[in-house]
Amino acid sequence: MNKKVRVRFAPSPTGGLHLGGVRTVLFNYLFAKKHGGDFILRIEDTDQTRFVPGAEEYIFQTLEWCGLIPDESPKHGGPHAPYRQSERKAMYMQYAEQLVQAGYAYYAFDTPEELEAMRNDFKTAENPSPQYNQFIREKMRNSLTLGEEEVTRLISEGMPFVIRIKMPAGETVSFTDMIRGEVSFQTDQVDDKVLLKADGMPTYHLAVVVDDYLMKISHAFRGEEWLPSAPVHILLWKYLGWENEMPEWAHLPLILKPDGNGKLSKRDGDRLGFPVFAMDWTDPKTNETTIGFRERGFLPEAFVNLLAMLGWNDGTDQEIFTITELIEKFSMDRVHKGGAKFDYEKAKWYNHEWIKQSDATKLAPFVQQILAANNIDVTDSNILHHVIDLVKERCTLLSDFTAQSRFFFQSPTQIDIDAIKPKWDEKKNLFFTELIRAYELSTLWEASDLEKEFKELAAANQLKPGELMLPFRIMLVGGKFGPGVFDIAALIGKIETVARIKHTLGLLS
Ligand code: GLU
Image 1 (spheres, rainbow, N blue to C red):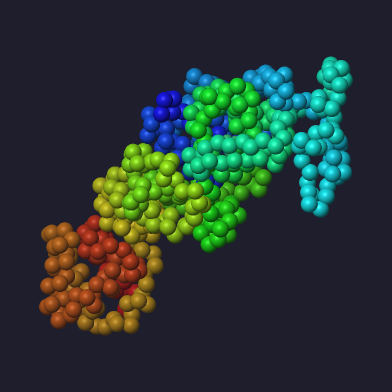
Image 2: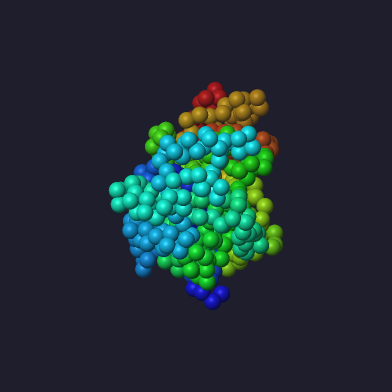
């Protein structure tokens, strides 16, 4: 690669970030870091009608939570500031004018009513929504149909106009996509897109090309939904005389529903019982907060890992990758052309793997926060670390730590007596009464000591330890779950262990 690698993620702040959007961020980021390049975040807010307050902050927070920090952005600054297109408004006009002067674009004066009339007049069964294209343009009020004098007069009178690209007739526009290979479009299929709006604001099509050029973008990676716009962009690069500077393109495959072939949407997220959005977010339209991956108890590392595997692999069976490994192994040639299926069960599997392999120090802040939110006070961080090591294998989501560790910090309020009762008898009652005494006198309180005493006492009473374990577990935990019982007893201490046995014996008598 001869050019310095500079990639960009260019979201429009129109709502929450979709899974596919965060994956686009990730692939940009990985590519930039792998090649020692820069990752730029540019806010494409030229469509003010679709602007959603808070959406930009949401994007920053998502990137931060994922650990995918841009080198240049509206927040981080950089040599090509401003990075918000609305703040760059004044820069675009000259390029639109340059295109008009060169004959690649034209002024169009059509009013909304005239455009509406055009759509009605030219509507046919085969073409229910006619576009402003090479055929229609000849019938409309623009600088191609009106005389030069008339155009000058209209402009001097302050008649509002837009600037449209003049799509050439009968040409083929081709480019090489890093994922798809050679891609071609017939210009006849593409309409004369507006480049500059009546208020002087550029549209996405003009702004994306101008900014990718001015910001020296070397590679433009974006979702497959932008592929149909590519011919317009390629022509603009050429018409503006920047063809040699054009970035290399890659259009990333869609993310599909697990059960069908369609694209995953927010509605599917809801239908499948989970939202697609990555973070909590109050939708200003509905005033609803979406629970995202973070709130569901995903670790950022697991989320990034599972995103990377949506449409990419390193050519081996390896599925668990740290960000450092992803940076090292990532390559665009291994991104699949076909859509990647998103499976929530598989997503949880990644999280479980990550929880298992993370050490207690790393998990502690997340767990402590979740426990606090569930009114479980943790004062001793050594105990918390110990608890995490004991239960993490059993936690798929971080939220599972609540049920899996509450009994270490609080006596269970519910005891599953029904699970003990059917096999309860006087012999067992006697055993536990004696166990209380033995434990009270015990000077050693390691799990192994407790187990030894328990088993010796069982043998003395001619009982099988196996039959006593379940009642003991229920006494300490409240139900049939949790790590080793002697580990639990060792950690909660003598007073609490004895009190819990006594409490259940009371319930049983
Ligand atoms: N603003 C476009 C979006 O919202 C960016 C597309 C591109 O990266 O060119 O996705």
